[in-house]
Length: 239
Image (cartoon, one colour):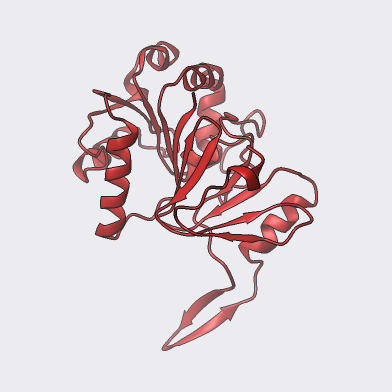
């Protein structure tokens, strides 16, 4: 049975961190150590150290996958896996080049708990096409893990950006997130979940539930659906 915890990020507020840590303790119950995937950033040692120093293991030791001499074997032997945030293109490039997509898929299908935040949530989707990141490297393809049948847009927000100019806020007239997702749906059919900061999806088997904050569900040819914490998205997503 699939066991996924997929977060948007944005944990600077203590209330959000406590919510996240409680969800992690429940999600990883019975696990002694978590295999942490740091490939979305350039300095792997630094991000693993920062995660530990700031308590983002929620009491679980985090073992950096980059330190394994055989990354595939490390995935095969892991009790649980946590894929951190950063640049999604960089993350996907590493996962593809190291041959890790299929081993992770197989372990998660077998019940290994998976957690992703930001880029780590993007790669749980079928493709990276709804990331917000710049393509700073070129992966072999847009293919990602496909642990869920829908796409996620992390760090989602509604409306225009406001830019501070002295003491005033000026509207920035670039495309909104809704505009970008509408562009995606001109060529793609999969639903997209826009996850606000501090918001998570809990996937258990075929069940998909939102907690921690709101989300907006986009489906081609249909009005966007605003979803509240505690709501189940299973039927709307067609999971």
